[in-house]
Length: 590
Image (cartoon, rainbow, N blue to C red):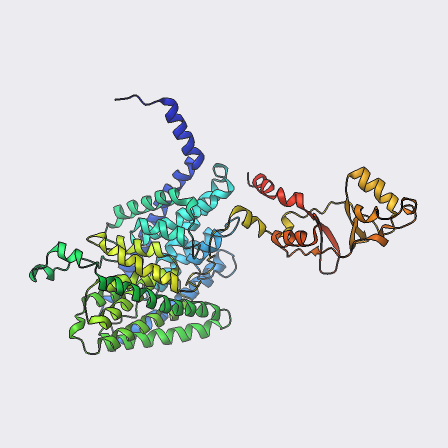
């Protein structure tokens, strides 16, 4: 056996350290464990102690219908009371959207003091039957803990590594929420962008998600929150169909055709749902809290009564796990008007989620999107040939989740991790998810998403001109003679262009090329103000660096004056400062 060269190992570990700070990897594992501990308490309290108890208790339909309203009211009281206790501004019900917002900030911030309040509010909303899921509180838990660790141990981390720990925490949150570690990683990397991913936190996210999953499994077991639906049909044993036959039946021309149809339908329906979610969120800024809670409570109560009348149980309650079970348990071939029934269930579930969002509930839309996708897939399955196979609802799940969150890879991975059997069905799921991405517009249920990552140069060009403006610059008054300008500024300071300022008012630029057009004998008598270049543009403080570069190129100048709305001189932007911007930023981030 050949001996390992020690110098080779040294180079290998050195390269590894350059790629990832070992403290980042350790910190990611710590975050994963911490998130799992928090979420184990959250999941147990929300489902085992509250939601499942209420769902399994035979109560009057009136009491059941009023339960979501009680949760909405309690959620609002917790957010108001929590803000007063910690002495902060009003705590919003935003959770996973806060992760995306912080991700795109140069210096991400999330208040750790708001975490307990939002977790309690999430328990109130989800535990009482609000039609939202727990991935949002889990993502908020992980991302806020990641930034908290970075802040408390800032001497061990670089400033830009806050984004890495933020993303690793989000991955741990989704991993803990559904016990699907790979989905957690991909979801955290995909959600900040609609058409891109954030790969810089891949390895830390893998470690954090694995640590979170392992810890949660040790505490609560390995059974996922969402039970595996795509399974080998036990009825196939009695009908003579073997396991191998069942697997091969997953990929057929009809299945692939159905996947394409589902992708188109899911994109259109997902577009409408995402638009509705944004309308609900926008309306919260225009409608009083009392009115919103009243409307949401009435709608949620009515949906409970309606779903109980149509389906024999309150399928409008909760994130939708019971609804998905109900879909798979039905023998649709024996039901009267199954398409109308499925369509009604889709509308009820969509309305329940929108009403919960409108009422200010705390929770996510991951599982509600999955539920709507399963319902949509079952509709297509029945509409095509009355088939009751499980594959179409699963494809609907992948397509609708991909369309709603703009996370196609995470959607397919979630299907893979939540299924039992073979990966054969992943191919039609990929088709359904891909088609939904092609059809849907740049819109998702998540706020603050950007279309794609920007390169270093592009991101620098979007910075405000304030990042490169020089305020301590020499200026020349308009009554200065050309001779004085030449000797003091051109020869003495090597400046070919100088701003002309009277008092604090900017007048234009004194340029050597303009002054040399005057006869030498007249330099002592002609003032600079008479030959000031007034046609050059001035930059406003609201400009971006990109705006300044475009203006410089258009007017063929390497310097711009920056003025406020009143024309008062602030400073200058030079081509040299723009070229040095990357170096300046790197120095400030050390």
